[in-house]
Length: 316
Length: 289
Image 1 (cartoon, rainbow over the protein chains, first blue to last red):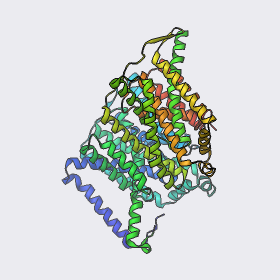
Image 2: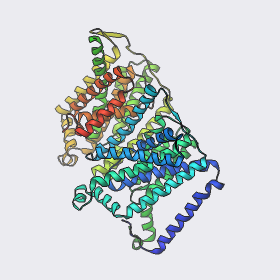
Image 3: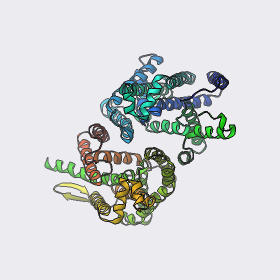
Image 4: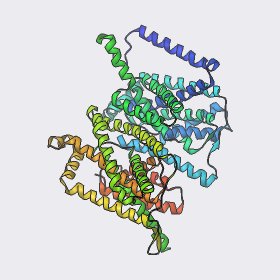
């Protein structure tokens, strides 16, 4: 748990956040189009990473299902986009992902460790190949067109979801629910004995995190204009949030945020600069980060902070 | 009718042999060395492409090129474990932590190996024709190379099983699988044994790749699909059981060929359905401990 040591620190943090928010809200007015599009991708990955951390961080259940929930959102957008207005579509995308999460959560409760990891990843591949088969054999088409909206609209929608996700994660961390989730991660049996309703807690948090992933998918689909199962259920979208969260460090809320932002920027930079070597460099950085940054960027920053500020100011 | 049934059965067995072989490799890497090697398929791809290069450039027959590609892939795996994974293992406070971290490191390796393969061989689909003449089995026709594939898969799998159960090194590997720390205290050079297991796992993948390249088309991005199939076979047969991997491999191969006959395109979906149902019903697998 993070215990605030002084009001001063808190005020500085709030000030920085406020300035950041103003910059983000106003940037479409003066920033180049490319920056707005890049920022939208960064927001999307922050949403995916933070919502992944909401469930998997405290409980220790490593879910590789983000691509499944994201893809359900994408498909909701493709199927309902011409029927309902966009905000309703986003909401419905999130709700359908949540429903899927409730079913999966209820089924996989007994699985721990590597089995849970594999089940959730199997879910992505199952949905991908089933929808692929369905589109080829039943509807006779692969791919769908999604109604598009402007880049700026996509940007603001994603920013809105981002703010809600971060607020939710922050409030959850500080509430009794957050504490209960952490106790589940440390010892499920003990948590159950101290009166935590383990099953309900796990399923509802899993569904909550899926909601945001689905919403992000529903928004992103409108930017892509054309989608098919391989785009919607891209397995890479399952791995990246996990990597980003670990790269940033899951101990603090800002860890996944920083991790996702830096990682997305890095990937974009490498793809545009070194289109033929980007996977090689990206993979190397990944291995390097796992070897030399065991507690993520945040852990490293905290270590540096301690060394600079001396032990008496170190509060974590 | 009988010919059709035979057709499906034999086609399933042929595919199952390869599935079993690559699953045994993964089983060794995860069951003993504790690395859930997501890059397993990349080693299959490497084996396949080395074989393809040797055959198209120098005319070296695939079964002979095994003698070149296998030691090469083994060495890559051995060195990777000795350097990267040993370091991770020593710095991780718990086995669970090591499993998580090593899996992520494998993702990095996957990207790197795939990129290197695309740079050196190009991204196109490749293939060659070797021993493709038909052989008649009870009225059903099969390409000779697929029968050889099955034969080799069974021979390598059994040889490996005997190696594990009959030799001194095999005993050390089994001891390390049960309890690495205790095995180390009994005088087994644990870091050597674990690296050996990882290398042997890569070797099995490489052999699998050579066999696959004989009868299927190959491309640098083919790895992940085979990794997933190996994972499914592993769970179906039971983690860490070599006979289990064979049972699981043949079972999956059979299911695949039956489903492909009824509804082509649904084979992968069927694999995942079996996988998920089995995870729910009996997570330890058919022959699991």
